Length: 226
View: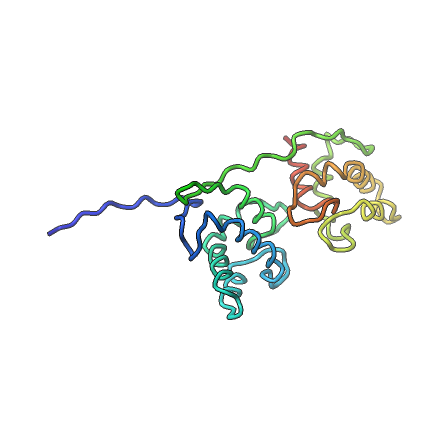
């Protein structure tokens, strides 16, 4: 006797069942996020700021990792493409995995329904006000130049290598006799607008008043170009 069946509807990229990967998604999203943040430096074995599928797999096969953490790792492995696409790092030459900001944006966008399925919701913008330009330059013409300069020289400006530009570090660069007048004007702009720039993106893992991050620069100048 011939049987009939009904084809299952294909799930969306951001939908899953209430119980998958050995965990209850609805009750464990916060735990997964906390785990991913807390273990990030250990997971990022080559220290390039991105956690790859290979690095996640290495941790997953580590016999010292408990079953609960393995279920979290499996969640990240199965959704690595969606998570890695949550935020577009303009400064990354080639996106090769999950960054900290990808984790933050991905979990901020997820809304879980009572039936266990979920969908991504756009993150409400935390910034709306454009600061008053200053710094002795024609900003209408040079926003893009400042943006490009700050990202290109970020590592050299970040003297302590903590991923944030402090006022002191910007001041040191601006007073360096080897810095040209045009670059000095860019640095003055960054110093005078340090607070609004550093508030452009909220890094949940960073201490308060850490300074300007790459994400701050990207989000701040994205708004100014609108």
